Length: 507
Image (cartoon, rainbow, N blue to C red):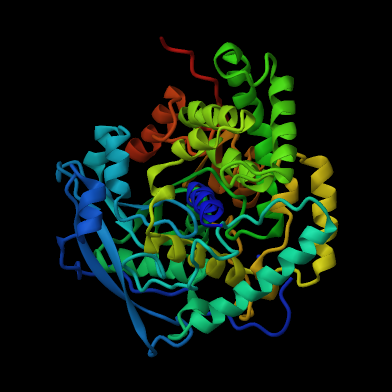
């Protein structure tokens, strides 16, 4: 059991992965205007220093209300980080960053972008501002008390082989929702929402003394950035949303699109593995590699190897489609499992997945994902709705559909949404650049097209003929890098939606 959940914890951390009823009162979308900077920069916490090394960041806190509908109530401190521009004469302002999740810590993200080669012109033009958003890490963290030996260890439900599996999972989902409510001792959990986090961004902007702020967000960070640009259009400067989920919130349809993304991105891995059949033996053609996956998953459902059952193989494969650099490790793991080599299968797991102690970020990340996802929008409560969805998606998305359509704790969430999800506002400056790989396992290209329609003429869509999750700086397409950098540095938005063709192979 320990081994199974350790692998599941790895899958959760790699994925990085909701009709309202009643009378809802929306909290105001107001924040402080520009003023003199109010933050005091100091040394970052040790864990941030270690993660950011060798880049040196400075950290500070900004106080915000827990409940914006009652700004006189309790407050929390949010921790932010800064990599200051080394060229004050070229500096334009701040570029706020978000790595996605929801549940991902972003304090070290400025350093990660430096390590991945963010262009010097961007570093000259902006102070890069990372942060732990409300409920995460060093910003009043929320926790539901998840442990690796418990039944909830991933933000995507397990693959449901049949109707009975959905019914069984419903019991776990209900227990998880009740567990989160029991652990919400300070009442913060219900206020961890995309809308409130967007309001926090504007408080941070004001505390930094900026009239406007630019923003770069990945994955769920696109939902947060879309919410900010919609709630505060006049305070948004240059906005880049990379790997879009398609709206300002993740709902049931959005989660099910993970299965669409898997179907669209899997062929890239299958072609890669087929070209290396003599080394890995997974199939001489992409079709044979796909059959290997299906056969292996079904075999592991009946006889797990080293704690890997078919459900975990599907989670593990999904997570390793995020980057082409992960393909070799995925192929090795398939090879070990297909050969029944338990020792090799364990050895291939990442070190942090086999450690005896569970990092606190595991519980925190899963808890924030649930809080934001379930608080933003009401999810269906009827278990039959999920059974029907699983049956449908098992057929149309056979690789992963019976997982992403499965029931989640949001069906039993104890808190009703406090306000409707943020509506995308197309009335504002043309300042939103949407960047989207054509084949993304978690946020398929459809998400970029959805947000392009909602932002209308405020936006342009930069499509990238590539696979994986994350394109700007995190990918290796020169056109994507150049076009996005040109927008951030010069403000030059593509005149029309643009396709960046596949980068030529090097070496």
